[in-house]
Length: 261
Image (cartoon, rainbow, N blue to C red):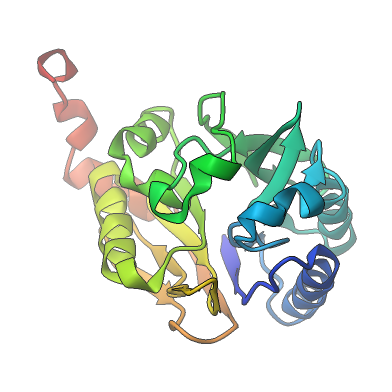
């Protein structure tokens, strides 16, 4: 299964320009790489323009959902749609979607854990539903957003639900770049799954973003990685047989004794 990850510099507060950017990226990427799944970063429509989100946010997932569904259908590609500011019931959420090749939304998720360090709780509402396992391209998968990565219970729940791949969409700061790498590797190793991440580059409001989008296998080996400064496409083909092999050789899940935890 082939991935193409979009590591982009988001244009702050300009959803139309960012949608044009993503459309151009996807057209070029599909033509040259023909991926099975394309992955976008967190808050790619607006960036972290938090005080201005009432002006820029989607309303009940639109127009971003339809925009991505149309691209998926046009290019015959599955899309992990990063995340975007989304107004629902007078609250603004950090929302993500997964879309299949037919242009159908197969999963929706609102970010559960809000980042105190970036003042998210002041401007955003936390998700009110559990993160769940979904299927895309016939594979059980999960999807979390940035700060969610720091909470191992969340990814363990997805692993116990059968997820073989978990996607992390982010605007992770360069100030905590080492955490970004180590936490992803730890989650991949402890859950014996692939971790596929898309992060932004550039800076906004004195926060520099780390880039270093990654594909990490169930051994914790980094299969592919972006740099920390460039807009680029990270391509990688994953073999799900690796997860089966790792789980057989190191039988973590059959060794669990949760009644003692």
